[in-house]
Image (cartoon, rainbow, N blue to C red; front, side, top):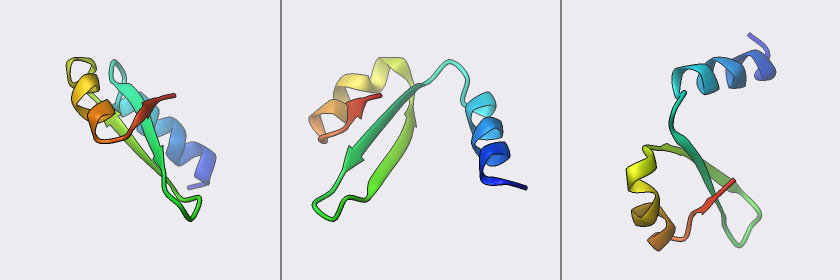
Length: 50
């Protein structure tokens, strides 16, 4: 399975959720699929909505 296919299946499975991400000091990006009602909680942890 290619990376693109994997991402596509992830996005399909996580339909209806908000994609949030956080970049650390080393430039690594952590991506989370968050239920929309939990967005403020994740923003408090330093994540931003893509």
